[in-house]
Amino acid sequence: MDGKPWLDPAACRQRQRRLLERLAPLDLDAVLVVLPEHVQYLTGPRWDWRFAPLVGLDAAGSALLVCPDRPAPLAAADEIVTYEAKWRSTLRMDQRQASAAAAAGWLAARGPLRRVGVEWSACPPHVGRMLGAAELVDIEPHLVEARRRKDPDELALLRQAIAATGEMYRVAREIVRPGVCELDVFSALQAAAVRSCGEMLTGTGNDYASGLRGGPPRPLDCRAGDLFILDLGPAFRGYFADNARTLAVDGRPTDRQLAAWEHVCGAFGIVERMARPGVRCRDIYAAVQEWLAAAPVGSWSSHLGHGIGLFVHEPPHLNPAWDDTLAEGEVIAVEPALYGAGLDCGIRLENDYLVTADGLELLSPFPLGLA
Image (tube, one colour):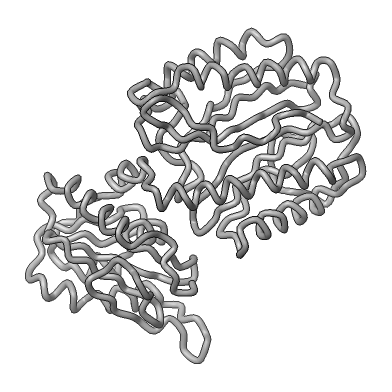
């Protein structure tokens, strides 16, 4: 963490206010947030897994940020306190305990606390003990729901991450051929993303295994006749792209593969015609499922997509296991596919879209071709 605000502090303040408005019916005295993604979402800076920052919000809207070692400049916080994360450059092993202790004075100044909102999946016992008899209320579902609508500063980071995938596909089309090692493809694509973003990535994601539906890169060479599904998910300053292209390793897709590819491409047209704010994701899924079931080769039984942002899978879910409805401002990854032995694994294509008042804006306008 270099101290730079990765998100607009003014927009972070707006997100704090929106969250407190959303939580008002819960009658909370304070909120404590510890997931690094949520610390970034609410205040701007982000630290990696080695550290334990903390954000506090009280009912009046005052914000606390607990930082490791030194204050983060331009963070959206009224009070910033620090804890010692390193002693003589060695990381402490009790980061969360030290971080919680640094918040004690801010909490004490707010008097006896009755009800405090926390993320149940991440709230450590150090925080729970510090809150004494206060009732802990799970606010994580509210935070996840609040994150569905992306603000302009978030969209800027998402667009940068998605642009990096375009450069990765350009490089992939130059180097994927029989005999190239999957690890070499992975390394070259990561280098392309870093050059595109101009800095280290905060996530590498997803699938780099040739001849398989997915998986990490292996010390194996790509084979003629295989299809190589590249499902790319670099994260720029914490925000994840997630889109996919499928390449014929030898540049000569078969007639069956081309027929399946054309059918998968057709699924995007269905999504683009149907998707609007207020449309049920299950209805979109059902229409695509019917279309892919009529394909001349291959089959499909997975999800159709999901939201992206600070997590690689976020609401809304284009998946019948959820009953989500599209809303303006969401960014979704749509990934129709066909798999089968006759396709030498299968074809998956994935595009990223912004949900607008009028429909979808394509954010990943990169070539879809198999060669």
